[in-house]
Amino acid sequence: MVTIRNERVSDVSAREALLDAAYGDVRFTKPSHKLREGRRAATGLSLVAVEDGHIIGSVRLWHVRAGAHEALLLGPLAVDPACRSRGIGAALMQRAIRLARMRGHGTVLLVGDACYYGRFGFSAELTAGVSMAGQPNPARLLALELKPGAFVGANGQIEAAGVPELEPAHKVAASRRARPALSHAA
Image (cartoon, rainbow, N blue to C red; front, side, top):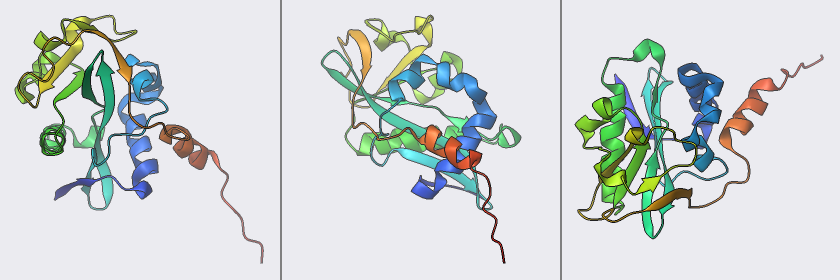
């Protein structure tokens, strides 16, 4: 049975290993990663899917803005390659959207395939006036309004917002994985 819950501090290493398996190092070169780099995820909007005590899915949302319009940036959405096609990604998306709406956020943005994310209500219609540095395909920049009119008239470049973090989680997780095991001499 798969359980979706809020991410815990103790989940960071497992989440980072999942993201490594799902995306590899290319994830660090994506334009959306550059907006997340050095920022904390939005409070209460980091979720994991857990099965048999193992993290098999993850999604997080981040504060961004385009001009005067605040929004959340969703991503990355990841599911363990061995667990795909079971609806876990869709369940994470639905929970993330519901929680963002309940917390009073107006808009969620993401970079992704309109065919997949369209079923959740995302489209490129509201993103015509905004851009993301390094994103070559504007058709992949999608938005979902959680409050009607929240992103109407948004224009300009999407910029990071929210609270800075002291050290990015993937670097903390990588340093933990790279540490040699401690040996205990008797």
